[in-house]
Length: 282
DNA sequence: AAGAAGTCCTGGGCGC
DNA sequence: TGCGCCCAGGACTTCT
Image 1 (cartoon, rainbow, N blue to C red):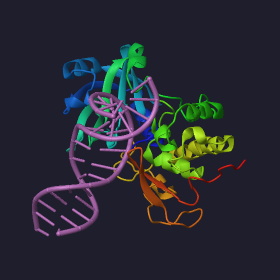
Image 2 (image 1 turned 30 degrees about the horizontal axis):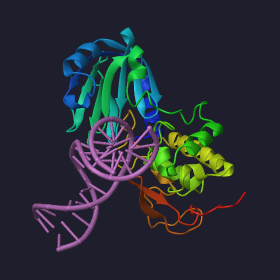
Image 3 (image 1 turned 90 degrees about the vertical axis):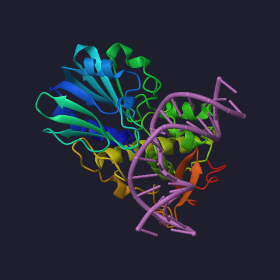
């Protein structure tokens, strides 16, 4: 599941290879992936565009192209964007092939087809639903302790739902939310407006810590995730709770539990992340 | 009108 | 062995 660290790793691994190249054409095998463009419009407009820059916003990859075009790619759950230095065979679920002017190719592969590809212009960037509604970058300067405190206090939802909400903070997904909550000793079902200043502070630091670690380890490769060179990351070896049901907590030794919160599986330590922990304290 | 639930989609794992 | 069922989850749509 590509979340912020995975998308950032893809961006970094592709940037050096792609910037300065030209997209000669795109072969779209799954037009349904193009949510906002017709097949004709997409293939016509993408043709002969230079790749000027590659950015990330939340879980979105943004390719800045010549003539003011912007290619937006969201990897969904199982999306892979892999550079091939020469013509390569398309896999079963390779839905788009971008042919480059150096004979290389960029393959978009997505088994579950939850991803999206949008071609728009720089001017319309802030009108794309999903992208325009994103909250601050958790590793950027807009994401402050004060912001998090206000954002959590406003809404009456549990922490799990709040942190998964991309308009509150951009880029977190199921894995890093569970990891951050464990680092901060907070139960996923605790209400956002029920946090002490200390708890907000711990959560703020935990979010940054788990994301930075994820980037350092080049992403979490549990099932499908690979970077732009097709290489897996190693952060799955450093998880404290996600996917560790029944294994002992690395802090206290008790078995990690798994429950459903906000429609998503949530892994947590019943002792370190007790719901009533710190009640009345401080 | 906010928050919850349903939806899309395929492959892997499990029970019988 | 093989069939059917359930689960995984990002973000949008639909419901309450």
